[in-house]
Length: 144
Image (tube, rainbow, N blue to C red; front, top):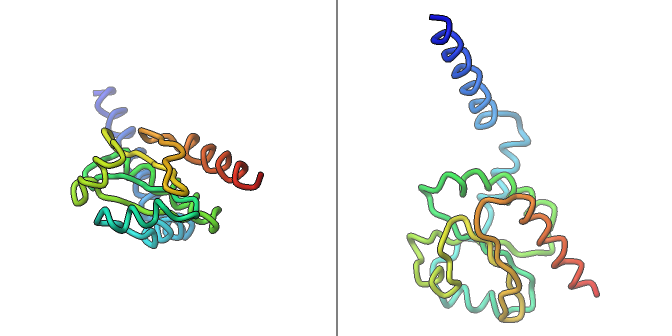
């Protein structure tokens, strides 16, 4: 009986935390709106044109059913907000498998960093620290 009560209370707390995050304050909604503003690419022509530009670009390869991809949305949104000089794009691997194949994406999420027709770096998996660190390192290299 005691363990059932503890389990029920634990579930109630985690559910409340989840609801607070999902429906929480304006900062969560603001960050999610940044992700909603990220351009979604659907064909290889668009991708190739952007990749060949002299603009540092970050491509978020995701799937709608991917839990870790959803968990990265606030971190991507934060990166978008903090780096207006970098172009961010999202690519649904189920809708655009040819782009995913071109970049050798084998897991989601995958973040591909490009400039001047070259893939500069790639992060495989939901790793917010690596995302922010790679952006900072690549921006610093550009300044030199």
